[in-house]
Image 1 (cartoon, one colour):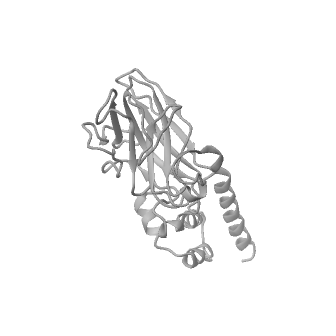
Image 2 (cartoon, one colour):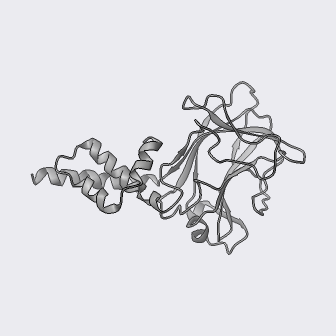
Length: 250
């Protein structure tokens, strides 16, 4: 679903969506629109929405570094969808721009639990040379929670070797790092900051989790909020069953 279509559906309330689902001459395309509308209704209340995508076709989508940096995130090149991707470089050593970390305080804040978001899917690559221990982290009243690290290794400066990664944000898959009372629900029910960073085994956090000082480049594209697969499948089965019953009673 295109972003413009998503914004249009966000204006529908549950009553109007229910009416859409029981139109007499409803076809399969209407069913698909109805299902997506149900999944996206949480967007009227919360900033983050199920299936939202950062594709970087018109800029960095609000991803920034904390301090003034000589190498901030930029939208550049041609990514996996034929448009620009997000690139963030870190120089290693010390000083501004030395650590691999960036964050978003805009569209990735809000209630992940109520929105039905179970994972973040993204396309990632690197030109190296240092290994990236890629993690996602979320801050809120319960403190900082982080995913496990996925290593991205590449020494080919001409090929970023794109790969699709999925980071679960379910309770058993996030680790409390510091701050707050360690309540998953209090953080993921009202995320105030999302961070993408390279982090090893020893993590510390303030306004950000401290990224590793590495000499590397992180390339990202198609950052997407997705549901738990079985939940989405169940919703589709229910919708198809409802449609089939209505056809039999005509």
